[in-house]
Image: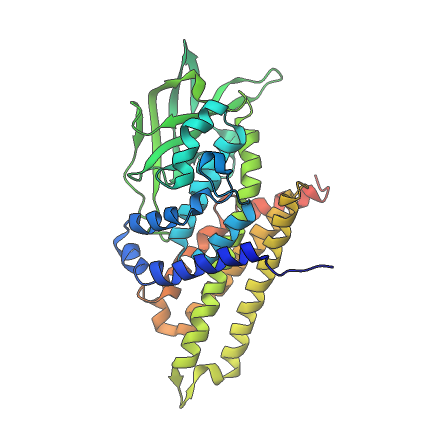
Length: 384
């Protein structure tokens, strides 16, 4: 029998994160967003709840949960604010997960406990200024000089890379040439504060204004040879597998934003009056909100399906791309409709739907654009 109900532990987690988002995040996040300020106290609150350690074993200070638990937390956070949600998503799936999946015993012991506790944040440097979706066009290079890697190059749009609690960035770099030609790309851990590693001033962004995003540069940056993460020459392949998981997480975040739009519109439609009636009494508004709920519901089923295959250890690349594509579209469409329902107030930053509208677009771009998702789906269908 197919049963889409959450188990008791999942439901307890979902409710606790929902309560935290409503009581601790919603009342204050607008101010952080307007000031473009990283919300350290909110992050500390998430750390106290164990959210940064959700999918990791207890031996590293994790909660012993799974990736679906992380997705549930992301959905509930994003119902209120995406900056907070993306800070958690990037900290776990991009900062800590590569270390957990591919790190040596020594690397895990050194870095994972602080990342799982939320005392520290990690980041992953893949995208480059001239690369975009073409991650294989990596130009950042690293060469071995004795027992050190010497790194030169730059990375762009890197989340969680410049906070006061950022402790490391794992970067992809060209470390040689493959036997058959082509670039050998490896992943290397660069601790924050390493000489030659410079974090540029934060970007001025359209959305996610309470999250941390920077360009990074490396100028003869030296790190120990043992900072190689995983197998030499497998850095790009390693990150592609991390991206498959991350797309399920971004889908969950997108569903949260889409559902948050429904939440806000239901409240507003019950309060706002026009032409002698509450606007929720007008069929045009009812139908629009109904369509928004359909999108959020459908997108949620898509990421549930992808997560279920992932947890069973089955191939889920196609399902992850479907979930990410459907959910990011739902977030963008719902944000647009919510802004329309709110009218002029939807254009004001003091209302959550204004933030939702600004935050939604990047969901169609980050961790694989919608075009990339369609390409991956087509390939999984056998279209080459």
